[in-house]
Image 1 (spheres, rainbow, N blue to C red):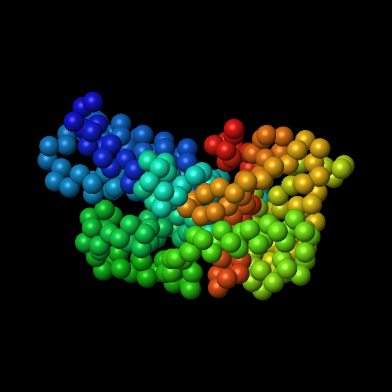
Image 2: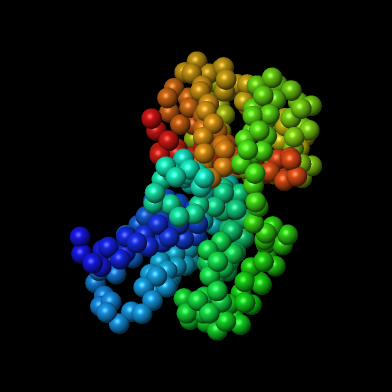
Length: 299
């Protein structure tokens, strides 16, 4: 292993984490980290004084360019877009996937899509990775005051959601168990009581559908709002999945650092369920059912 490779590997986890949290896609993040490595191996590094900052600047710039080039494609995407989940990432587990430095929850990744690429990058580096303004100024070739203004604009765009959610994982798992019990029992009253009045349900299916008892079930093209509407939707779909002849199996896992469920139909991953809590209730529900984004769950 060359010295340059060893230096790069020291920061690879951080670089992947920045790229993943910027893009919400594992393969794209891996491609950008690999491109950064190849570029790193080509350049003369003797005069680089701050290697970490240099590499972070490289990977951040590549992410911004990628997001700008993908803008039109995202605008033409049919239905709801949700990020690709990271499987079995648990920040409290020393045996968790070693290449991960920090993976945001699905809810926060969805939230960041409100920001333009530069706002997203500065928000992530300052609020998540704790970079100082003088470091941001060097990474983005901007003044410290300009970086402050961009961060303020990002927070204004996010509104009250700009704060990071400090989630109690045990309480999160307990709420998840209660949710599953209510759904299994078909208990509408219990389910409604767990949901915030302004809850939003979002699902991505990648045009994939499941057929059960002659009915086709697929992800909705638009979000569903309100606890009554969300409750009815959940209780109309989940019991049908349990009745699938091919066999429906569900297990609790850690995805993006939080307890979630992965459902299998006939041994094939069908959907990842995750939610965002607030004040002991469920604020947002996310269903990722796009098979292209569930490949890592294949068993």
